[in-house]
Image (cartoon, rainbow, N blue to C red):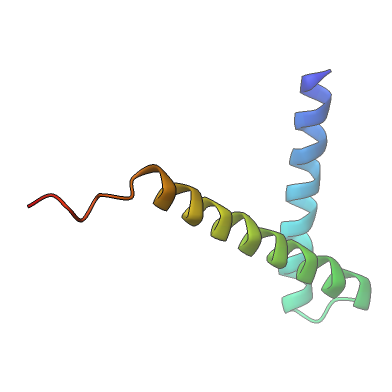
Length: 64
């Protein structure tokens, strides 16, 4: 079951990357929409990761 879920996520990621690539070259409107959603999701994941990593090591600058 978990393999099917991971495979589905992988297909979505690859499809999103393909739409970003295609939209940069003037693809159809739906590809540009999917590309926008993909890029927005990646920004959300990136910002959540930055917040999480700051929370794990808040005293990293106090190494005097």
